[in-house]
Image 1 (cartoon, rainbow, N blue to C red):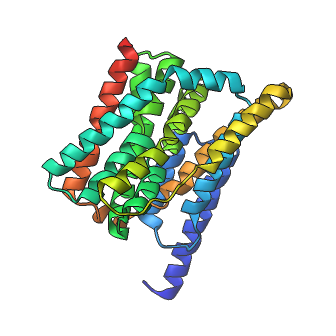
Image 2: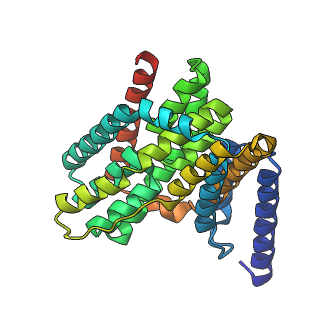
Image 3: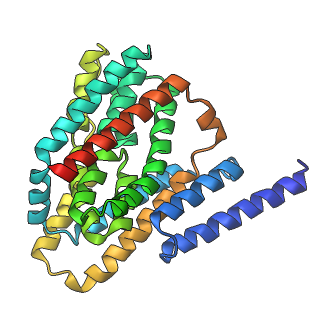
Length: 313
């Protein structure tokens, strides 16, 4: 490609990304469409800029969750988290044990099995980062696990709401299902936001309660692989979310609630757009077939079983 052609290509990709960003900010693109647009942009224009969009997306997601906290009374959060506590424990333990057994069956490296299993069981990329640090996983194992989780998150963002509407799940049912069955917080809130406001509140609360299990799982993993290393990782944005919820419980913010929730949803969409741009052809090509099968089978089993629990619990 000639230098001038490359500059024109780069300019076009930047203009398109700016337009998509604006559409998310004004609320024109829903979360699922924003992610789809980001994935397409990443596939065709990956490498045309050096901006750390992945890091910015993670920050935006955390800001949006904290904003949402101002509209969720603390008492409701405690009740919602308590209702699904034991179900969350059972789901996390079962997913990790099943993932490790399947990993052994597929003859995968123990580190890779732990990363995929913990990412599926708890909260995707955050769990992979924490557990990977504790078990001294190498960069390639981390990249493979993150790519698998991201691909399945993208599928879930479209499939979960479609199945929810098809089965006529209530807002509460869908919120719990999304919180337990989808890996990453971004896709959980994105899917729930598309489904409805009540589903978004329930899913966010249950998902953040699930994310707190990063700490004990990372500790167990470090002993299981005898890495001799454990790094305590506390998701600070969850603490800020709880603080925002407490403030919202004592200060009447009803006047601002109608602006806060749409703003949070728009930030969710924008974070998914920017996350999507980070997945490219190179990342997908690094995924081994056996690792992809482990992630896919584990996710399907988790999604189906949690759906059945939600339907008949």
